[in-house]
Length: 173
Ligand code: HEM
Image (tube, rainbow, N blue to C red; front, side, top):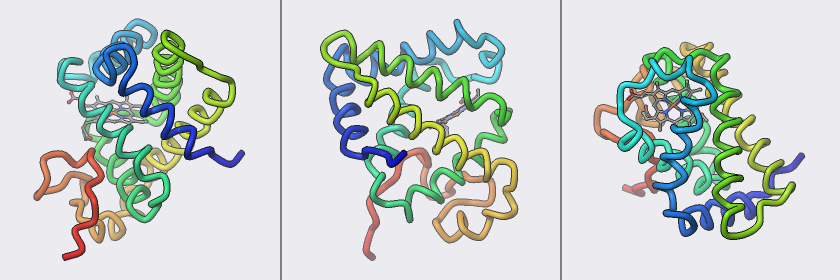
């Protein structure tokens, strides 16, 4: 399936405006995640009130960079490698993807449409994100040079940037 980038962007723009926007979506994400997958709860130290902002900024960065794989791929590799420090296992990724698509569907159904096409595009996008993150998490050495070149440290964090989950515009310095 070829991803419909315009549909992903349009649905995410709607999510920002509807039902208390990304705050509503993000808080519901953690509420449902911990209800449906209680075993992942102990991994999280940051309260949902803070953590949801990071997750939403990350999804916004991904959706906003669909036409820039040069920025997105090292970003996802670095994020996968950072998740090793959080105790994330490859087996946890499908739960996070399932949960994000489910809460997005709930969120967008309240004030408008949530179509099968939207759902299948989001599922496919999340499967792709997961596989890129998992690939790097399972083979961090293989992606070391790539992420260093993109400005990340070998552990996926950035010394110069306290918010490595945001894809910044290129600086053209
Ligand atoms: C689509 C895949 C995922 C995305 C986009 C994502 C996004 C994020 C972001 C943006 C952060 C903030 C810190 C950082 O960027 O380093 C974070 C932290 C974290 N993520 Fe994920 N994540 C994903 C998958 C997962 C999975 C599968 C798990 C396992 C249950 C997980 C567990 C955590 C934990 C435990 C933290 C640290 C929370 C804390 O500060 O206590 N994430 N994630």
